Image (cartoon, rainbow, N blue to C red; front, side):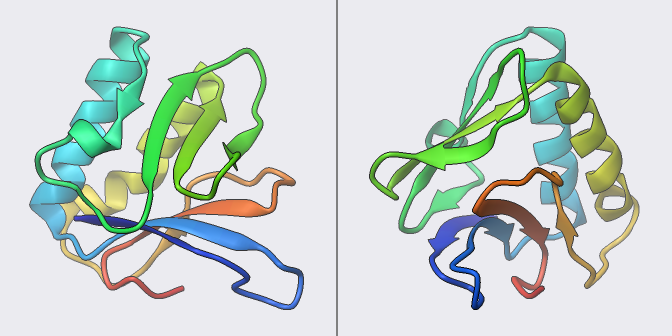
Length: 126
């Protein structure tokens, strides 16, 4: 599984932080990591510390907050995913199909009015 940041993906100047290049087993690992660390233990999750994720040009830290803000950054290198517990539970539902079988589909993991989207895509496309 790889993590990267792509700037200006469309005419609106939107950006994407994406997790890509993974199979069913890594999707299961990622799901279980979110469930255990964020949902159950209520702790932040620094993806640069996850053994099976290769951070290419950025890092993403997932954390629990009182409001859904989405992904933010001050330097376009370190990103923070600011979501509520309910939104992380929704992410678990969104990635569940990737845990059942290897598929080529993709999912944006939240729908927030924010210039940076969070893409979950085995093939890296959208």
